[in-house]
Image (cartoon, rainbow, N blue to C red; front, side):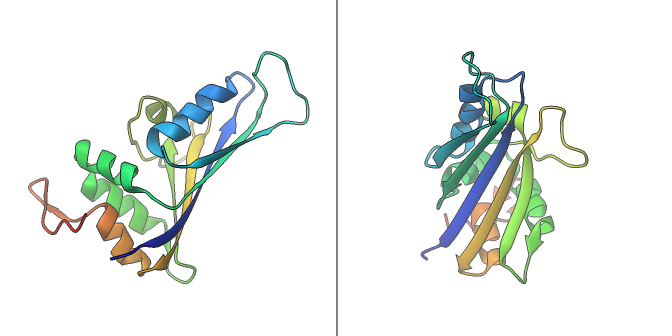
Length: 150
């Protein structure tokens, strides 16, 4: 099956953070993403500008592999289904920035962390969003995927 998806990843860069380290947050979870740095209006020479990192990708394969490696397929599927807007075909979820810096997936719930979260919005054109979510994070039985089409 061919999947047609567009994902946008947004991460705020706080004044206390180095922009390149925030880029690493994105690259650790979405290595194929095209990353754009959007600095705040004032450019400081030390690289500690507040601003934003915006990235786009058409593949969440690496993220899916991390779900499997970390044995969080059911949690990931649940978090993505919770963020699904069936009318638009968009799935939105947030990930913890500090965990992502370490290459670990940790879904953010409740209020954002002090440094902010990684915001992910995925638009699924083909197939339907539910099918794509089950592809990324298939249901499991005793931690083993029941049907793994990956």
